[in-house]
Amino acid sequence: EAGVTQFPSHSVIEKGQTVTLRCDPISGHDNLYWYRRVMGKEIKFLLHFVKESKQDESGMPNNRFLAERTGGTYSTLKVQPAELEDSGVYFCASSQDWVSEQYFGPGTRLTVT
Amino acid sequence: QKEVEQDPGPLSVPEGAIVSLNCTYSNSAFQYFMWYRQYSRKGPELLMYTYSSGNKEDGRFTAQVDKSSKYISLFIRDSQPSDSATYLCAMTLGGYQKVTFGTGTKLQVIP
Image 1 (cartoon, each protein chain N blue to C red):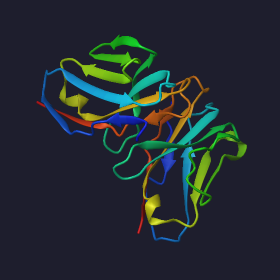
Image 2 (cartoon, one colour):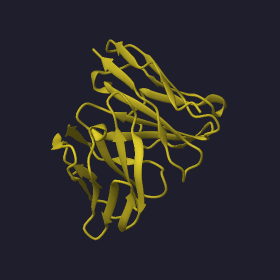
Image 3 (cartoon, rainbow over the protein chains, first blue to last red):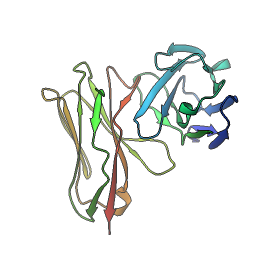
């Protein structure tokens, strides 16, 4: 069974540009999570989807970040416009239900210059 | 103050040593406690999961939770070079939702 996949693995953009990160969860997993790790800090929760609905978006830092999960399958996280402090590794995780283990993808390393 | 405090290391031990990794936390509402292992350029992988206070053993790994002290530990017996990774403590208020992580401790096991 394929694990959680994320694309791209690494993205380098300039301040002010837009970037879209993609996450494909494990097939059949209704729950999808986004996390972020900035340099030297802990991994922090961003938001949680149940199918296509946002269950908890309390960790989203500001309105420059937009997450979508159309059709309840893959999800995208758009950063527009990107700022220097957005640099970090963005992880996606999925689980079958909210009491089940979250399986993490390898992450997308975002560098904003 | 961070919700979860974890010494970032790095921690370097010889093969076969017993490793002790620890975290403290401030929110007494945390109920579920986890340890993740993360290899370089990979995502975190769940290693151990415990609910409330007590011990849990799985092979060479033992997780301990002391809720009265807000302190959790992971012990690795007979450490192997393949155990070299970053170990992240984590906790949630309920189930696996909205995981709160420590910063991680980088472990190197020297052959």
